[in-house]
Length: 512
Image 1: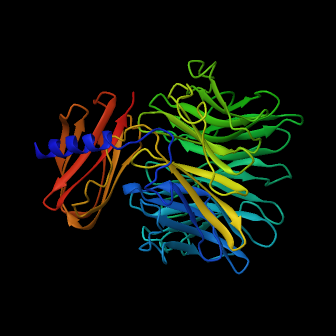
Image 2: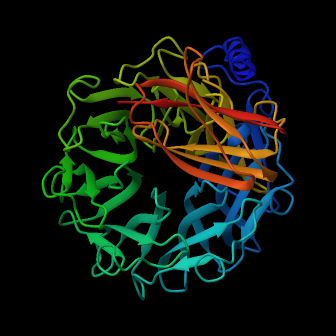
Image 3: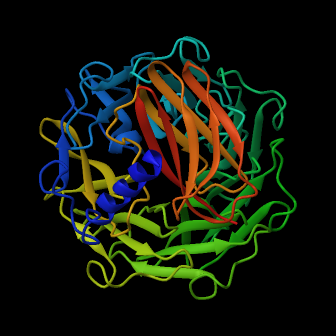
């Protein structure tokens, strides 16, 4: 009864506080905006939402004219979290002239960052793993770094995305001009310890040449079955086409997807693929793209690569962001709504739009469905987006000043009630509770990291307040488990962990 009362009380609090849709969250920074100069300057290229509405910005750190990988952690109010790294920032000083493009957080709190570095002749892909407190993790790869020499000389390989398989193995995706002058798609797989996995593709690497000219890869996502969807665009000599590739778990093109594992789509004169997410247990693939005419697009594919005509209008939803340079990012709220973010109006405004899970634009927020905010009066770069535990929309990027690059973030209220936050008073010994994947289908992975050993009774509670599953954990500082939820109906649930030292909870959604 106490457990159900705790959950019910929290639900009431959240219903009263989720806010007006599309408005800046005044509890974050100054009027919803955070601008931070880290030493001589740093960028935000990837934004991660952390437990308790904290945020992690991954990007490039400038020191004496050279660039390095960096992570900076922010508290829920937008202030720098000085308990992380060195005064809030963790830096990899291993090599120089590095660029960050992706990052992912493991269930144990460690962070893997991907990008590339310049070796004096060309660019090479690189992974770096940081501990949960912002130090380079020496147990990963070689002294915390994993570098595979795909290209030599003036040829280049760029690391764009890092993904985590359910078994802990790591996918690194990007593009390369290995073996020629034109760019191609590339995916690589590493073991959990940062060693190239030779069982994947050809000696751990798969390179795909789509067309006669350049193929640019920008985004990747991993399905629940472990297959990787890689998205970008390809030039046929006269026009740019959207390109989506899918690889099976062994690193080969999946012939069950499109034509020989590839979907190529001309939309208008030119179209560019920038982002991707996997939607629901049916493995629907939603792609964020930009077309000539200044329109940002959502396109949904079925699991076989065919256009899903039930989405939007004939499989496509569109919203103008009023500028050509509109590299977009997409993510989902806990109710399945899709958020698309980009830059707009003279390059100095952050912008986002909300669509239903079926691709219908919500025109009730912002200016006919477009929410904007001016972060800086000059040129802004919108690079990333995150949805935090409270369903806030957080857009990240950076801009240049006379003192150096500043990290810039803006947080908005989405208007969607969060099911529950994961920092329930934090009266327990648990420092974090992780649930993934979300939305979940047949399996739910649970990770609890404690500041001291603790045991919990774990309950899964449905929307009506009924306990549908319950079990006891042993006394430990770290608890990781995979639970079979295939018999539970689709809907919203809460996982509650309670013990002698208190309790912690988090909401999740099951889709069928």
